[in-house]
Length: 365
Image: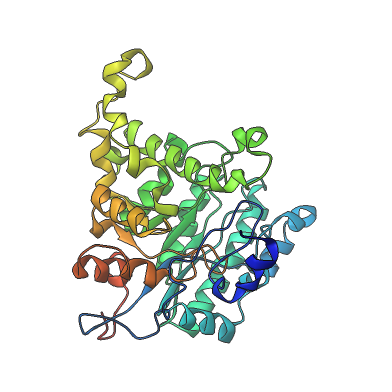
């Protein structure tokens, strides 16, 4: 009979368990040593690149006034967002990550033009400074005032041409207003023109906030992937990706639910034509657009990653952790333990990101 006393008597074998109010998830890698730099695949050194990592700069948060207290997320790892370089590098080394692509989740979309511009200006200057100090370890996405599209387009050009950033991080929408809306097209056009990536990182699905209340942090665990799914589907079904065929979009959290259920959309307008716009004629099946989008590999299991590779192709995937938030602390082990080819592992671990962002491997990878 297993009693509480007997259970804890064997605590030495429970090092891989994480206790929370939602159950006892196990660490699949608890029984083996974690990956360490340098990462090798078939004797080849791989430069590992994490495309989904975060930071904050206090000077920008201070411009939020009374709203500043709501900016840091209610999660573990908040203080680590305010980067102390040597500590961040130590954490990256422990995760076997050579380089992080940093981004700042938008917290300024409700602010007026001048404040939003000032916040993004600080963010971009600080990101450029940080990346310039450690160009072999950090790259970054610009912050943009998307609620003012003309200004956002200008700031994107400055970020790329003058500050050396790699693209821009945007939300899933601007307070529920989708980027497929024509008023945001100047930003999409500028990103396509510059050949840079727009990284979509959701901030829940606010319209469903009442239903997300309760245990499990559903506003994040369901709300975030759902918001990404909606954002991507709108870009597809509104014909936005046809209008900007060269647009590079990277979606957080494995792209939400879209990669696993994309083909349902292929049947939608046949089953219910009255719910579709006859004036929008897509150039290919809705599900086929998924293969031109990019996704991080933050799906938590080997089977989940194997499935994602099968759905969108390994060429569209790259490492993502949400660091310093401890969602995925063993990303390299996650990829290495997945039943996919060594070629696919090398691509996901860093090859795809290096190519997409124009990151020099310096003889590595």
